[in-house]
Image 1: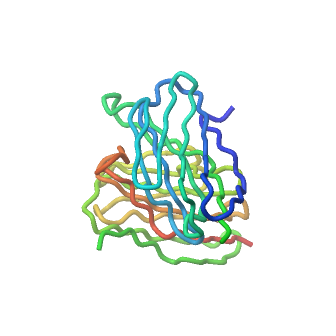
Image 2: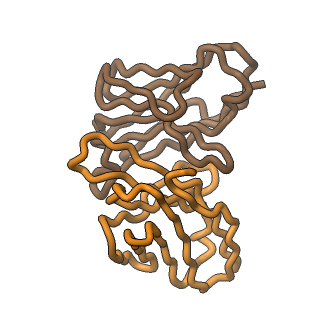
Image 3: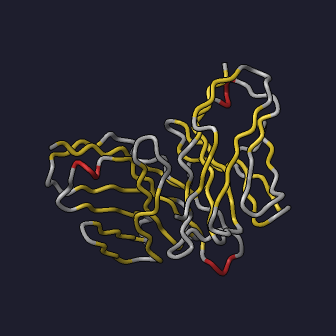
Amino acid sequence: QKEVEQDPGPLSVPEGAIVSLNCTYSNSAFQYFMWYRQYSRKGPELLMYTYSSGNKEDGRFTAQVDKSSKYISLFIRDSQPSDSATYLCAMRRGLNTGFQKLVFGTGTRLLVSP
Amino acid sequence: EAQVTQNPRYLITVTGKKLTVTCSQNMNHEYMSWYRQDPGLGLRQIYYSMNVEVTDKGDVPEGYKVSRKEKRNFPLILESPSPNQTSLYFCASSLTSGGIGTDTQYFGPGTRLTVL
């Protein structure tokens, strides 16, 4: 079983829709949760990160973490064609646990049609 | 401009012909890493380096070598490439391994390698 599971998609939505992207994980030691966006033929770039449980909002994007369910989500409001990309979740253990690498999900491909 | 550069961006080669993919960052980052990205498998770490002359294996190190002689450069070496190393490769760097907040992990543009 992978430590981080993510539906590969593609997820196709019309412009203006609310998008929900999700990851589940098995390691309860994970404390930092990140979302990366990767456009075609580009490297991933950090979109948002959250620490422990709760929500974090940044413009049209909201990241949500439910540690009790080991489930994280990224919501995109008023989706735009420019949001079409692959979204990867990533997570790691706490900063006081020494060196810890990021563990990535496989990515979900999102297509927003005009 | 803060960036991670990789060269070449595209490479087609044959089995057994040694090759090097270069990676360079201009942010004075201590931590650098190589990943490969394959459909259905996501990003998998090959090797990482926490500083000059300090490198360690990631999840899939077989068939690869790295070196870190200078802080800014972290080349990936395939001494005898095989077809199962056909993949999309990314170099990344960050201040530490945190990859969090101001310690963002920056990725290069990728190198698409095909081994025939």
